[in-house]
Image (cartoon, rainbow, N blue to C red; front, top):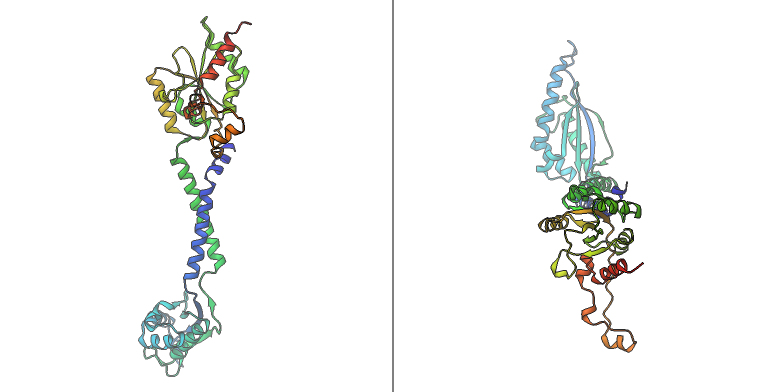
Length: 367
């Protein structure tokens, strides 16, 4: 559940962005697509009933299939329906749908038009033209089509705004979730303890600052078979939370020298040595490439990390506005010379010679 919460915290904005874009696109599309209305009717092709018998039903079925194909393409039908419905005659085949009901000789006729009155008027014009005696359309034989029913109202056929937004929201949500997962997998960072362990191979790794009992047992194990004092080199990767780093350093047994080190020569910090036990303090969300680069540098120095801890990153505080030098002197506050001011490398690499000196002094003081 913790990993899921972290994933949601990092990538929820992708889902929200996709959802907003999809809803906006659905609304725009809904307003740009013209509204259409449709009216329907049913026509019957009767069998050849006469005094000699009911006639063959198959002949009526075949004639119905012929009419369903011929009528939308007939020029007379196009002119009549187009004039009554407001649809361009050449577009009538796109708006006039005629199908044959399964197992019968009944024609289901649907006509769509920009307005409801146009759809009803165009449909009535078609029915009158093919069922009249004689029919206006020359392709239809007299008495071969009979009206069953004609709807006097037209229904809206275009998608409503609510349905469009619901569909767009569902699509946006799916795209957002898939995109968030893909983005997270394509953005390699150390987010979980498993990620850190995968990069450090055989080096033990824990989450948090550890406990005094655990670190004491580790120091005892390192001291086994040796009379030398175990020295710990603490190396930060990324920008781990200072309070957690201080807590980690304090959890080592009393008398164990803990040095803050750095592998960047330009940072000005102390370099780790081979006789020290190297402990890594890795900030969560540090790029995986950064961890790999540090591991590679340590391999070049022939130094293997002994422990690793995954800590929270240092919170980013807003940079305060610079105060003029004259104002600080006027208030009586001390002004530190540039040589005593901290450099960016002190924060990133945890290189602090002053803290190291204080720690060594404490360890060497007579008891």
